[in-house]
Image 1 (tube, one colour):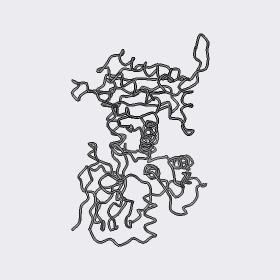
Image 2 (cartoon, helix red, strand yellow):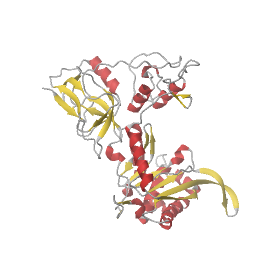
Image 3 (cartoon, one colour):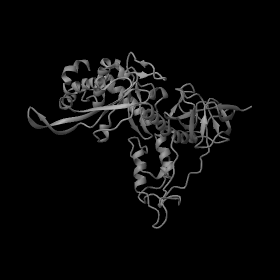
Image 4 (cartoon, helix red, strand yellow):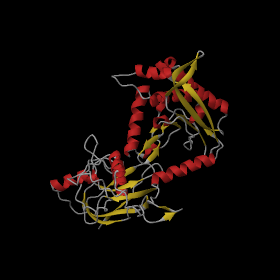
Length: 427
């Protein structure tokens, strides 16, 4: 009698997932904890490991389908599994290398598993003649890279790898796309569909993350009467102090230092780290801060969370911010790492811009944006001198406080940036 593996509870209120691709086919042999499919939730891309060993009897759902938690995913005939020969196991490990994290509660052992039929590859679009022909297994550490190459019709074997460990990176795929041969003159570049007289290159459905982000931002704009205050700040002393904070030749990031300033200010202005009740009749304040940090990833904007950030030193904040950001970029964040923030810091200066009309991360009530720190002419003691200037922008929910309270919070951060030595011992 076959055993049915159903889409597991993905945590944090997630009720559905998009099936990106199957990693097995009917007739394949699988072992316990062997990845059998890649799925995309509103939070991350993960591999689903099989809880059963045996032979795949049936697959439920096609790639691209949206599946509900609890729906049948895979049927396995639980027969004894013989050892897999070394060559096939090596190929399987290479094929699955680095393609996602395992769901908690469904096995945490290494990827041990059986054979699988290799699906026919899509016919790749023409690539540069300079690209080498396939020579053997290809290493890819990210499911996002595989998905991008697959969506663009590129064969990963033809893409020169520049990763430190010989892996194909997202940048490698984008470079391959940039040198791809264009369609012959006079032929439509896409499907032949025309809109407003232009050929449609392609249509791509919004992914689970993009749809979720869109819904959340729309709700934020629709429900929150937001207001904005901003100020230009002389960050020259902070810029200089940061260099002197180096330990073993490594200084903390500017984001970590600014995050510490934000946490100190939230201690004095806790309303901006709270939230309104669902019915809007109560203001909920918290004994601490879960700090969200807006992060650009291959899947789009994500907000990984540093929990209980108020308890961390500047060095601990720096390490944790780096960890959660890297986890989000690699697609390895757990749902718990992407939810529950009570205040968000958005350092868009990393993109080379000075300001932004940020949208509050619902259900929070405020978000602080930080532009680039750039040398500009500045008046000091009646003389124009070059100084490091940064623009801060605070967007807040006008229902919870007025401009005076919000400005007081912002001024406290400004004072910390302009006179960081006074707070150095508290960092």
